[in-house]
Length: 90
Image (cartoon, rainbow, N blue to C red; front, side, top):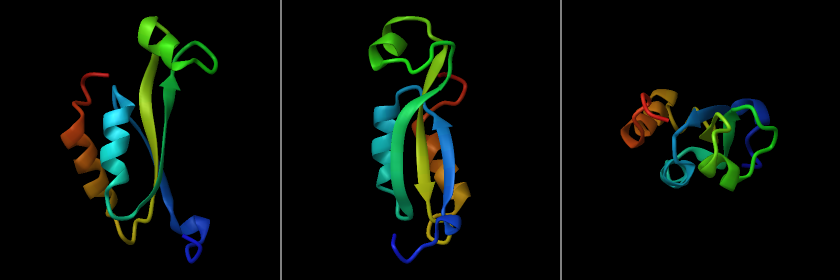
């Protein structure tokens, strides 16, 4: 990572319904530098995991992926994500 300038890396946020499964799988792809699980959207500022799971906060679980596009083609990253998650269900 130290040899890469921050501008050489790309970031994508992917809403995956259950971020634990998606994050674990994407983290293993060559070229993925870092992953971070969190939430997108919603109407509650800084919700807890329990709030998102037990109430209607409107959030989707998501994974932010920092990757090197010279190693991992973005199309392959998205194809892997879509193999893990049906985007019509959040």
